[in-house]
Figure 1 (cartoon, rainbow over the protein chains, first blue to last red):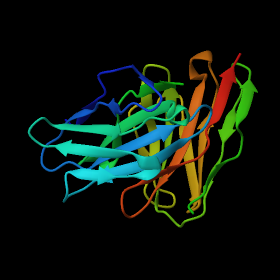
Figure 2: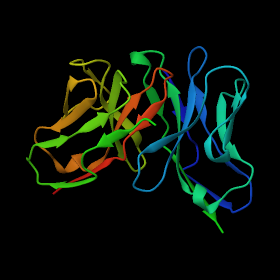
Figure 3: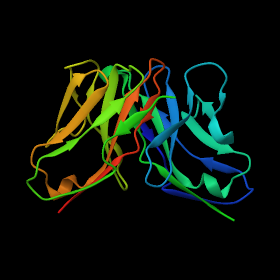
Figure 4: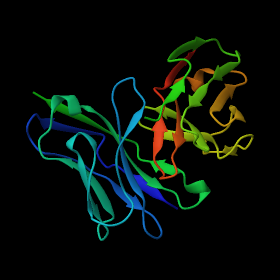
Length: 114
Length: 111
């Protein structure tokens, strides 16, 4: 069965420092991977996706993610965090069965302090 | 830009009431979804629809039903609301490229 795990419930970073939000996945075959962000009391917004090609994927708001097949990971990164990046981040993998629906991780709360 | 609109941002209902949550998308997407979001549990799929009048159960369909009479509209129905259905409900539609576009969410409180 396809699954995705976000091992950290919360990540705390100082403004200006690099940030990493971790995600590991378990799929059969080649994965389709996604990152979404949710600001307080809002819906989820698409950040980036990996389908194929370059392992480093660039997305919205300066975020990028690195696909690592050997480690089955798709960590979200940003070189310099902003206070406004504080939000809930979800990793997702596309289920190859069940109409290709997305399976979401439980989310990681990112807190960026000034 | 794709827009997914959920009719109610905040609702307060009483146990046993019937609740309708409406969702409309404006990008002619075929696939639409209803999720509920609870702290520590992430997003869980309730129902989805891949065409008009078609519906499929997700992971937690019990206590819910859906209606898709028109392509742009996907409604979630709680026939008899219970306190354990207090949650944030998120509607989404999916593009041909596989991206989900979410509405702003409907926060339901059942007293």
